[in-house]
Each structure stands twice: as structure tokens, then as C-alpha cells.
Amino acid sequence: MFLGGWHAPWPLSLIDGANTSWWPALWFVAKVWGFMFLFMWLRATLPRLRYDQFMRLGWEVLIPVALVWIVVVGVVKAMGLYGYGNPSIILGITGVAVSLGSIGLVGVLSQRTQPPKPVLPARFDPMAGGFPVPPLPGQRVGTGAHPSTKEDAHA
Image (cartoon, one colour):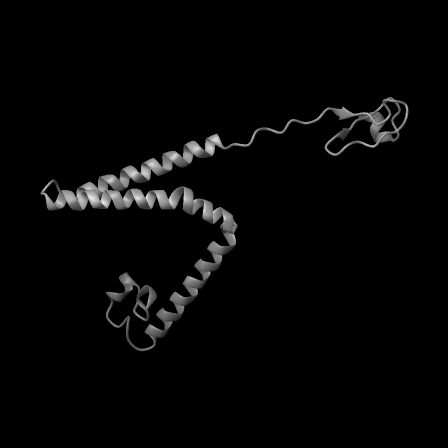
């Protein structure tokens, strides 16, 4: 079972009697409620991702990292067979290097993919030609020579 089931959590399991009587039921219910709270809290606070965003993450990040890791493990196994170094140290160093490289790559990609600042179109004067003309999509209506309201006169 998850989280130790009906057993008391680690520091409390060292106390005599923490896993007897009605305490196991209490521990189990507390663990279930705690897990449900944590799950709902994470689900409510994390951003929602679309299916295509998950697929992009998988193809662009997770699969290349997994392939590199498979190659690293193969190299470490081969080095172990031929007596070169301690595999745990080599895997640890490689894991730290891959983690730092991934973090650096994410930082570089996030700076590079900043959207350009939108260019605001020039103000549109509907009375410029003497005849009122509606603005095109994306145009901002400015105040003309003949303001129609008090707010336009003060702007």
C-alpha cells in the first residue's frame, strides 16, 4: 500500500503502541486525506496544459534526454565490465551534468522565444476626409478635429 498503509509515519512508528489499537485506522485515514488534499491542491494550482503541449515536451525534451541517458548507462556498464572506475561515481557525475545542461538549455530557450512587443497602429481619425468612416480591424480611433463627446474634448 502507499505511504506505508496502516503503519504510523516514520518518527512516530518508533514509539511503542503507535501501531496498536485504533491508531492504525487513524494513520490510514490521515494518509488518505493528506494524499487527497495534496493531489487536489496540485491539480488546482498547476497550469493546465493541452495535449499538444505535452506531446511537444515529450518529443523535444523527454525523448532526447532518455536516449542520452541510455547511451550513458551503456557506456558506464561497458566501463564496469573492463574495470574502469566506479560506476556510481560516473553515473552521479553524468546525472548532475545532464541536469545542469537541461536547466541551461531551458534557460536559453526561454530567453530566445520571447514574443516581440506588439506594434500599435497609428491612431485613426474617422473624420479626416470630412465624411465619417468606420475604422478597420486593429485600428485605434483617435480624436478628430470635431470631438463628439466631452471625453473626446478633454483627451
